[in-house]
Image (tube, rainbow over all chains, first blue to last red; front, side):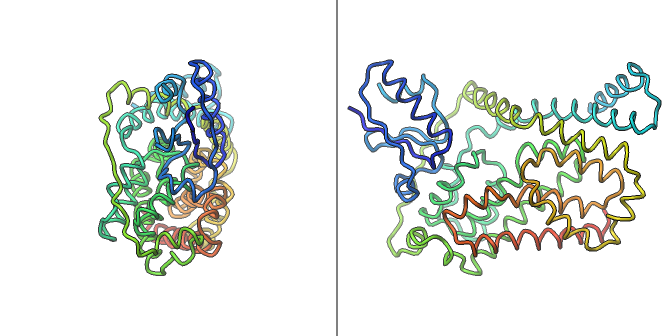
Amino acid sequence: MKNINVYGSGCKNCIATAEVLEKTATAIGVAIKVEKVTDLQAIMEAGVLTTPAISIDGKLVHSGSVPDQKMATAFLS
Amino acid sequence: MLVWFTYLANYITYDLLGLVKETPLANGLHFFIEDTSKILVLLLVLIYFIAIIRAALNPEKVRYYLQGKHRFIGYLLGSFFGSVTPFCSCSSIPLFMGFVSARIPLGVTIAFLLTSPLINEVVVVMLGSLLGLKFTIIYIAIGISLGIFAGFLIDVIKAERWLVPFLAKQYQSEQQVNPVQYIAHKMSLLARHQFAKEETLNIFKRVWKWVIIGVAIGALIHGVIPAQWFSDHLGAKQWWSVPLATVLAIPMYINATAIVPVLESLLLKGVPLGTTLAFCMSAVAVSLPEFMMLKQVMSKRLLFIIAAYLLVALSLLGWLFNAINL
């Protein structure tokens, strides 16, 4: 089980990011738990500069854009 | 090269449609065809090349460069990077917090955030293609100077007092900050092309209809309203027209893209350069949604100071340019 955080102020792109991750996880059969982090202080403490950003098990792996399926597969596997 | 678009407009207006020269309809239509074709083609081509060049520049890298620099160099660099770094305006807030937590002087951060919308690729390409190189260079120089001076002012008045509490605490804490890490990735040409293609398509999809709307309004002014009316009402003699222009421009943030063609036709009708510049920059820089967003990280008072600074500075610049009559 991978714990995933999607950081962002709740804009369209963050929702899209979470959706891509969930779809990809189902497709490649990886169990994940996605949480959307919108609290400003939490975003700052995670060291995020550009949103949407993704962390997996506490490690920042991507920031600044909605990933495509190929990128998401690389993060998750 | 740009003369091709004039030929195209000549051909359609006079040869194909057979309109009589110097009638309002022919003038307006000619303006419309020349400008829409020119802007749309140039936007596609130039945004792609600008994106290729700056693909590898990102806010993480900028923060790494800015940390620990001397204040005055920081204002200059912050202002410069603000104008060239690509990032989505929805990232303004995390970016602001990230800079503050790296203890980059607040003024440097503000300089970065201020020039970022002011000097953007769409406005620069449109100004360059419609209003010419001189106007564009003046615009960019003023944009960068406005950022530098704002940064200086922000630190002089110790504006960090007016950040929201958790940020103010972070900024003023005695605790040592760790230098930020940045690992540069070498970007392949293919990756640059991917980035540039996406940027260009995204921007184009967003702005094309505004270009058409803006040019249509410009064409209407160009064809219908006589130049005499403008020199009587909006000339350099009416000193109040400059501050009025900066204030009227505030709600125009809705789309700055639509404004440039309107300005072109105003300039052609003899509205002075200073008034036009003030209107244009105010429309781009003083954006209500941007300010609403920044309310999450700074108090109303600080936002008010920044807005007032922009309006006053732009009015002064407008007067100056009207007076020296470039």
